[in-house]
Length: 360
Ligand code: NAD
Ligand code: GLY
Image (cartoon, rainbow, N blue to C red; front, top):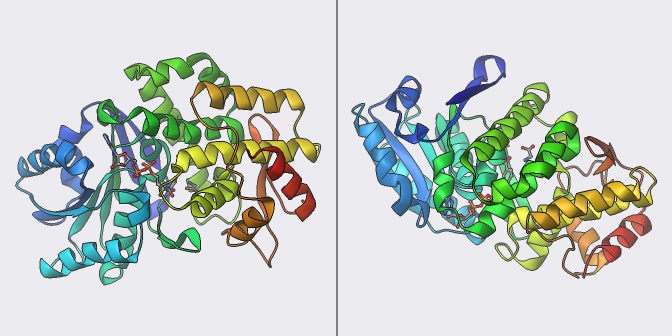
């Protein structure tokens, strides 16, 4: 097991990474204030890992109140969130009751948001079970639900007390989901860690084959990058925006196609190629770098072209982006592999041309 710390003064917390950490009661015990917890999971992850987590907790005398949500991005909304509040209230949960989110990014984002609101904030723990949630969504305290007009539009910054990152949960993850998670892994190489990008170029097939050592390394290196960025800029007033490479275009794809149609990681992959294309057209990124980026996404089995929604529709959807400032779109672009910037001077025509060139 390896441990990283997200350094946020009194809100600092550990990320324990390893195969089997889900069975280690001693990692959970110091963070629980009561002898009962609420475990939020879904209809897919529940049957796979709920019993294991319940056994780990019962070994330290802690009982579990389960909340089993419907599975899917299309359920990441108010009505589903309310199911969590219903259970919390019916079971007289208090401010000191801990909520544990067991699942991928959808469960983690909803569980975290519920914890941030319930009685104005209850402690919560992330137990991520997808590659995407292990390397990204469980760390950093962004929590949210979707609105029909925009992805993750309603939410809060709310840090967990602990992230228990058990990479053995990846054994049951469908291939398509594993590939989607790789999009966020590659992102760290692209925005700030060229050495990691080079490592990924050499090891991407090992990750696809679920080589345990390679996965552990990729999860650790991704979390280390994320922890550094979050510690420097928790509320996204600067550097943290770079973690959104490909996301402005990607969120437009997810919303425009209907939530759940494109996986988040797939949309980020195509969105990253649109961002790379625009970076090239604006003179920031050379053509060989675009080809190199395209190659690693193709080798990961991810889409490198977005759906043909039409540039106008993309721009409309992108106008809801959280990085819009004074009505101006701020995009994350690449200067080189390993160096991202936020740029707000691209014209609508330049953005539209890049979208049209990268959508089929
Ligand atoms: P997900 O939560 O929908 O999980 C993907 C699928 O895999 C689901 O069907 C799930 O039930 C299933 N699953 C989960 N773990 C499994 C396992 N171990 N074995 C078998 N099946 C398993 O999707 P995701 O990719 O984990 O997360 C995407 C979400 O995360 C999006 O809503 C996105 O907006 C959000 N996100 C948030 C942040 C953040 O910083 N908060 C960052 C990136 C993405
Ligand atoms: N996933 C982007 C962020 O956490 O900031």
